[in-house]
Length: 394
Ligand code: GLA
Image (cartoon, rainbow, N blue to C red; front, side, top):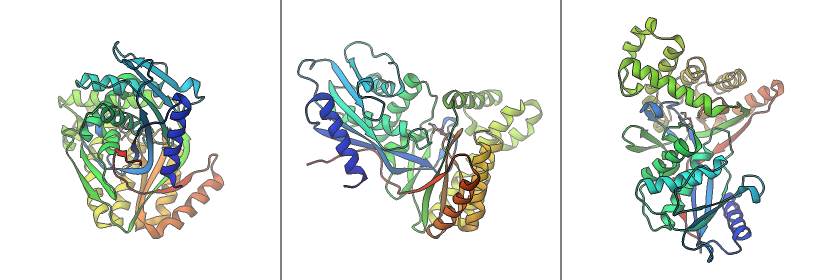
């Protein structure tokens, strides 16, 4: 049994245990790792994530015969005891947030579909996943997009990937309380296998950028997690919006670098640094996309180093041990690839895009780091996979 088969078996068994019958359909959506364009999605900029071979699977089936006409039922198999990870709500009454995050992803998706005029049929679902939670690999976008696909497809709706992404984002913004952008959900919904997704977060236009076959994508989990991530994230977003307002532009995407530099004396220094990260990061997306397609590792090394420094020094979302590990890995691989903090930050993961032969050097650097670190870091290679889709099961 491979990884996905085990996950399907878990979702199937969880469904059977919760509801006493077999599920009839299965749906999946992947996690993602962002290669470049960090904290720019909610500033309307360009990003370059790729979907990874870790995912959320939703098993779905008809409602219970007793409650047929109006109930939606869900069980989350990775969230604590079975009893505390069940939810049911009335599809006819207004849908309100529940007590915890996973319920709110589900309720928010069903409510979001309704807001776009789509009716969800009464149904039951069981959700299982293997995207690590809290590591910066977007387990929540995988969860939200998989649920959005399950609810819509099961209800006979054929929604475009961008619509699934918007609905999952709405759930996160309005029901979970995280002011996230659209990058993670778009990666989970619209990515293509063996490619990264170059996404314009303003128009949602996107194109697939091939990942050169000489390159491996390695995610290095530092094991570090900072608490209050959501409030710090929302604060960063508010800071960016304050700068955009200061300059009278719709979003920081519209801010000229020269104008920002000229205004430094008038701006609060923290706000200036936040904007300098975003505006400089916008210029790093295209070079990384080109280097990724060409296998130009010297370019990746340089631009990803700058990106990491900018996240650490201007956006303040790194931590000293993460900076140290990033530096050790960068020195180990040299011009054979790049490494930087990925995702929201505040702990989490580094991503390295480097020649396959650099694997042992990355491992050596991590071993040296682990010899002195409080928490061991761990590296894993991921394949770039396609976005959300139903799983054909016979
Ligand atoms: C989180 C958010 C995304 C994005 C990244 C930072 O993953 O969910 O929308 O803002 O952080 O690039």
